[in-house]
Amino acid sequence: MPLDPQTRAFIAQMEAMNLPPVTEVTPEQARINAKLRPCYPGPDVAQVKDMEIPVSLGAVPVRVYTPFAAGPYPVLIWIHGGGWVTGGLDMADGTARHLCSGAGCLVVSVGYALSPEAKFPTALRQCYEALRYVKENAATFNADGARIAVGGDSAGGNLAAAVCLMARGEGGPSIDFQLLIYPVTEPDFETESYVQNATGFMLTREAMQWYWDHYLKGPEEATNPYAAPLRASDLGGLPPALVITAEYDPLRDEGEEYARRLQDAGVPTALTRYNGMIHGFFGRWGAIDRSLDAIRESCDALKKALAA
Image (cartoon, rainbow, N blue to C red; front, side, top):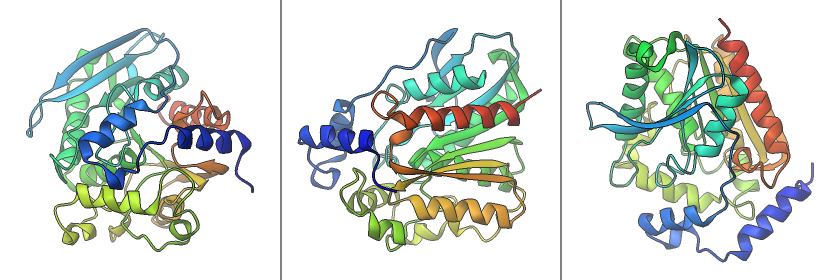
């Protein structure tokens, strides 16, 4: 379908800011520029608490969101996007609030170390060990460690999918559900969606190449399924999933192929493509109404998957 009118207006608004492409700046400047783009506030929740979780690669900051409900709460480990290079707890705040409020779950948003200062697999290992810590110390969070999901958007969706693979490969912890919002699943820049949406829709093919170059230590790591989950030979035994994609997104095809691979492996998986949408629409509820539809779908799926 045609590009959604609200999305077209949002793209025009972003283009009017005249920020240079990430490919023309340093990672440090890319982080500064990312913070200049609009972030929309999320709903109130009962409590928000910043803390650090001890992991083998250094303490990782997390932000814990508690819903207006009686615990112990089901848990969502939320992993933000930003191409592994930008993003953070503040930029993910509104999304975490929506998921906490809408799904009625405790959300632990993970502020993993960014690339290129911390290349693969540092961020993945931090996210996995944060999951394991929350699972093992659920009582201290007033959480139910038997009801836990992992989710993320874009590069965060990549890390969420890889966390599920790592949990399977390392014997746990068990995960009940994975929420993957337009996830990065492999560095193949010749898919139909990469060709169709290479430019003009905010996230570009060149930008994704830049992000991958900063994330991996070398091209040989592109075949590692913990970096590129679609390269895994077997996706059996992974948690049930909801995969959300956007029509005008370079990452559309790899996200949808990952969903099909999960289905073929016998993993209960729902796939929803939001037509007329672009990469990043999930967090743009202040400008794009369909964002709230995707958030509601995600919250409904989480509530169902994490029901007592």
